Length: 296
Length: 155
Image (cartoon, rainbow over all chains, first blue to last red; front, side, top):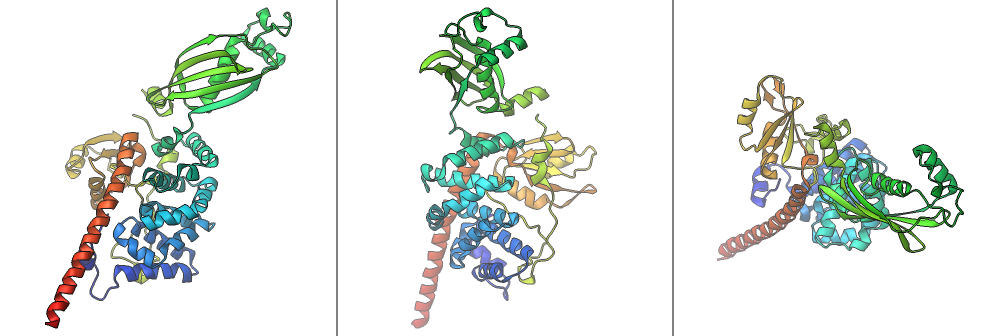
């Protein structure tokens, strides 16, 4: 909630201390107390003050920013949480965004190593606000490590927090390199009953080809575990086998996310020696929608 | 309607009131130690602790500016038009008695659609910019008033 100066004046009792002094006391207590719980209480207090811009000059005057950053670097999860929430609340202040550009490593560091979902949520909200307001460069903030971490959280979370998904659209493509061996073909034949001689030792290796269904299965594996990931249900597929896929050759399997909507579309292909051997597209039902279907 | 798995109800747990605050920072009401950011607030609320009797009508009257109300096991999910209304409702009704039970109200940002989330973040940005300009004009006004009154005194 927000306050005006007049409102604050009315709320302060005649003998009471004003807001600026109060914030100063909180910061002092953070540094002077030996009681961890007291530190947690004052940091939470300061973080909530950071929500209202009327307090920003007071927080600056009291050097509260240093308290927030110090909290991020402690091993105490509650202090870390309060620190990141405070930064998330105050990040739209000009001085703070400047400050954050230099301290970005500390914030990113916490985000990468934490296992606390609330810390992740506030970090993501912080990142979003900074990027959205153009206060930080995409390249500076969205490092491969950060993007990978966001993807991992998305996969880990049962809690369907949409804010994680928002940043995922940066990951539009997944590539996997596979090398099919004769053993793969024999096991696949055994499992499926497809003993077609074109996949077997009855033909010379230059004429032998990988089962088409196996190629599709590898693509399905990427769709189901990486992009879009677990929970995805394939609705429709169409594909073409353009060239025979040979064994003992490097095969690059690519899945590209074309459309991340209620029903997503992906395109995929397999290449050997830069030639496309298998290509297709699919319509998919992604995680949040597919669970609804199961329940009804 | 999707069921929320138990892990996602972690943030809906009612925390203990903090009783060990130093006197100078103990307010009139007891509060838990909890932080809120734009990510925590939402126009979606969950209302826990509603006694299991036909109270849907009474609850509706209570939540006057509701938009949608649905029975959700023994928890009610409410969606307001705007976050400020949800904030006010939460403030007014949280920890209050209700037909023999005590209500526990919690924001439920996980129930937002992507569009609602986007709007919420945009709204935060415009609210901040509005508050900054208002605070600035208020400060200027105050300074002008003070200058005017000291000028008067000098005369």
